[in-house]
Length: 349
Image (tube, rainbow, N blue to C red; front, side, top):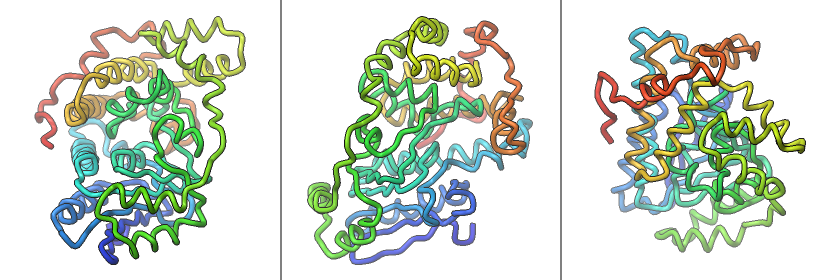
């Protein structure tokens, strides 16, 4: 791991820096384990009052997990997959249950695993550089890292829209749906951290007061323009109904959204629908257990995940050969097998 993640303590503030800029700060198993262990120690350390997590390199907060390493091992006896996801999800749960203010600075690209290492904290600061997405359906995966918990709790049907399409959001939109809790110009972040070091940060209210001193107005949320359409279309119960609904709307947004969905893994789309519907009524830890079941299944056979990562991240031809290739060929049984308990057992949080 070398210095892929760095930790420091300054005046009661624990600072985590993701320092893998060449990979857009993508998380490895070792990075997830190190963060989890440090947070466990800081949670009981009376000298630590709050924690900040940030990305190094200036371009990304964290672009996701290092799924390429998993795919390169292949699906047969893929021990790297289960080790990575189990370690990552335990870290996500550690953040969710962390007893002190946890402040994530989403300054730059924030996707997949980067969402999981930030959204479960008490404070999520977004900037003019923030670019959020959960694009997993494009690589045959699911919006995990707790997506089954937070996406159904976004306003209206925006969570399902984001989970199926991988739509990219910037600052104002991230506040609109609840990803971010405050907007701040990136050139204020260093001074903001200094203020956290210099002031009492023993409670969320203390941090709120400091955030308010640096917060800016990001302006109107572009997503609001299409909110009625999003709620109407993505309130449908099946992927087929979503496709049909989009096809009868005479609007550029509908045509573009349908074109995006047609590029996604058909089986991923159907698994995601089931995942988020179940997650709507589950507690956080139960969502993480369910997601571990899904990703364990996906990584255990020659699934669309391997083909999607090949097409998008390895060969970069962006021309995946999905199996099955159409929604109509994805059966209910195919979807349900992804929710079975893995042979190795459930995730223990």
